[in-house]
Amino acid sequence: MEAKQAVAYAKNFLEKVSSEAESEAEILVAHLLNVSRGSLKYTSKQIEEKDLEPLLNRRLKDEPLQYILGKWGFYKGEFLVGEGVLIPRQDTETLVETAVEFLKEKQNPRVIDLCSGSGCVAISIATDFPNAEVIACEKYEKAFSYLEKNISYNNTKNVKPLLLDITKETLEAADLIVSNPPYITKKDMETLQKEVLKEPETALYGGEDGLYFYRVIAEKWSPVLKKGGMLALEIGIGQEESVKELLKAAGLKNIGTKKDLCGVQRVVFGTAE
Image (spheres, one colour):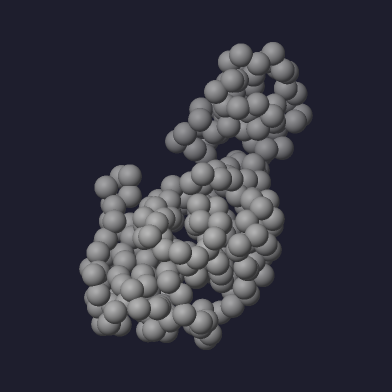
């Protein structure tokens, strides 16, 4: 099949599971042909049904598109993903942007990324600040393996992966602590899309009210900040006031929020004095 025919064929399959069937069809066909999505209409490469069908069948079983591709773009880079690790999302770029803005005036900063997962946040910060020391903390083995792979894949030698349970251990003083912790409530877990449920529950579920890890981080990790250091946390929709109160109770000052591209309050931050 030509690329155009392959996209139409794939779209027909994907309409059963996706509201963005055409977009996903183009991405999968471009992936198989090893061309950019934008150049699909110009390529003369052919594709066989037998090569496309295994990927479509995986998607029909609600496997996330990103897992099928094995990698996904985030911020300025690309990250390896698969079963056992949270998929990088555009919302989380707001956390990176908050960190980048804060670090502009810092010399050789020490940064700690909690619940690092794929390492997309830690590696993105380290890429923008090659003189920074970035420590990426992850508890779970499967996710940690992707963290290690992505450090190598992105050649970020200034990122140190650390297998660590942030609820039990802390580290030495940092200029910046960032985290995209699990924050989905028990109620919301029951209504998640099937493909989201293919991602690790440990990266999604934040306790009954979704705030468990924010409490841990505010209590245990705020004291780790150097004077003038910042804690920045990604949050779920509607969690900003609760998280701001936790940071305030932990003694942080200059507490604020930052919106994502959709206008949702996506990051809460505060500084140590």
